Image (tube, rainbow, N blue to C red):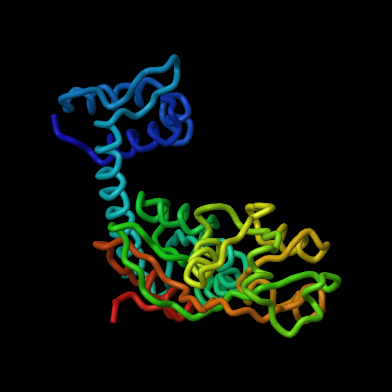
Length: 298
């Protein structure tokens, strides 16, 4: 019995949904057709691929190993299909899956996606936003074609390429006592009630690294999962924060937040992430041209 792409597609959909019934619904197949494909696939395997928990199917270690390879094969087939479509039409066509860590995804990528959509109207770009750790995981497991992040990447399966520069700034509300000082001291930074992003955030990691290098202890009083919530908290006097200048540009301009000079080293590099062995398709190359990114490491 030979392995087919359809069997891999069905297997991947069962793994994603945890259900034969839901997999069939999403693939427009009958439950019996999905069950038969799974049965044939497991007959070729030396071990079962799923653990049965009632009606739910949970991947075991063998299934997870196969899922990684199956997704790579299916992604390769999609790339071939996109290339073939592009060869038959002068216009760029296809779908691109782009990830962005929170600051980049909310403040930089939307404008770039708008420019790309106007230039290539027959394409579709789906943007997924999360913290740096989440976005790197999505890219590595094949859920994205490319990603842009503001934090360091710790995955050996991904390559990080410099995209553009950024800096973090210490901000406070206009009524805070820091708003009238020229610069804050290390002691002031150590005693401040900080409002920061969650663990896994690139902004949080850069802030913590800068404080550690300066030898300053700190206390995080509030932790929010979104930059907008942090800005509102700081503006209302709940504490101080350290955020990307990109994210607070408008608030600084209108006086809703106040930038405070500090002794911290807060320059950072925004990066493009790709899988180590991935291929730059014509569609992806077109998107990189619009975004100002580059594929090769210099």
